[in-house]
Length: 167
View 1 (spheres, rainbow, N blue to C red):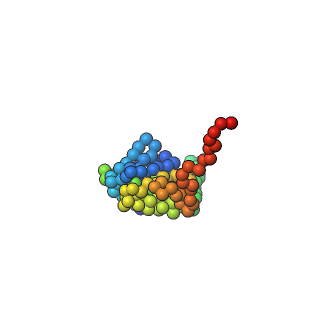
View 2: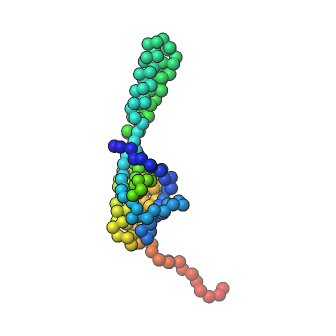
View 3: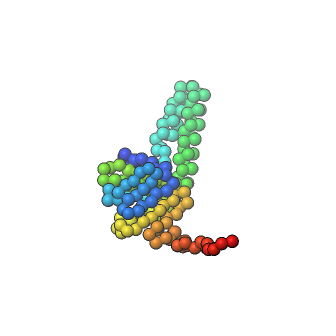
């Protein structure tokens, strides 16, 4: 899995696609400028860093600098644990790459949600009248054009009861 260049992490918990425009925070993108959308696992810390600390620690221990050598080995152990822990609970991002090469990255809680958002964006590109609202913090996608939330209906229209007349 390669690294995507020119990426920008978008920390907005939501975005909206309406009238062929993707809106988030104080930014918008025209859907026709999107060249690629991917749901990818966030890369863990590369193994070379803890290996480097471990090798340096062993060399320093051989040179009889015990305290520094043990410290480097402990740092290597912590880094290996962080990689192991990350691999047990992977995180996923939705990468939106523009024709210009710039990439916007949205953090998702799991791969299934990232894929659902990717499919919803594909539908918006295919059918320009489609409008969606995505809430990354709640793992929900609302189809605004049909007033439906994933797997549950919402009430559509004005259902307020207002009494007319005088008291």
